[in-house]
Length: 338
Image 1 (cartoon, one colour):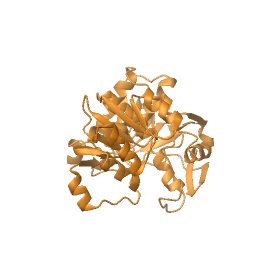
Image 2: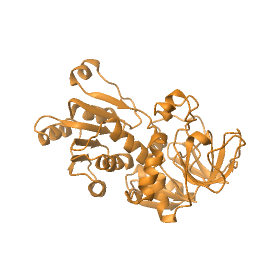
Image 3: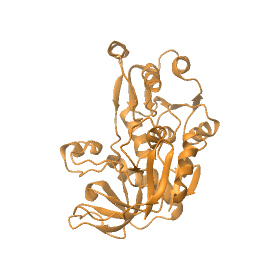
Image 4: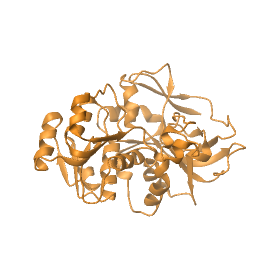
């Protein structure tokens, strides 16, 4: 089959690779009706995250089970399934505590920007639902594999509660779905930090009550002004830069909560400043598997509609165009159809 391979900064190719197959008895192979480009894929695409030679790409996926290994019990051929970007056995102590993305058997998924995908730890990673969803439902379901699951974790880790004031730093797909997640959790005021009009519009559709265009110290000052000098109850950091992290911490009220789900790049924290800020910090790779059953049910019941986050749809063989569009911020998120 042909699949996506990154050779170096800006060099994405769609080329012939080996077909996925069962390697371990705990594996499954699925057929993918849609995949996508993630904002985190842009770090190596821009040369800001090193790779060791040609690297298969893609970690967001859903699809129909084609084949399972001899030890797989929870899914079977013909079922529609979704899995996390981090595999898990869902039985180790970390999994049972709700942190499947730190599973002792964890593997980070790659190779999902392809028509077929091998999924290790299938029993603990994949979640099946009865029937096969309609084609127009697939994009929303696909978001649960990462960007919605990560946005949901951002809201959960930042202790978003009914009636709270929330700030979301970052207007990519994760940030936008963090806005939606905070809205679903009952936040009264949701302030989206964004400079891009189409993203601001979508943030409002997803539940944002306010938009702030300033960044850095100016952004912090604006949040403090809007909250009568107090700061936000919860701030969701969905970027991963030094500026975004400091903006998040400084915009939070004493005793408030900061979640960080953007993959960090050259982020450092100064101990004394953090000490006197009196904020709670919690984040990391989202334990998507913890939330998958609930999020899938919300999508399938029509409670949430997430397809709008995909503002560019391309054939999979034009995946390089999707990377370029997202890199140049001409697209929020590119959906790829084999």
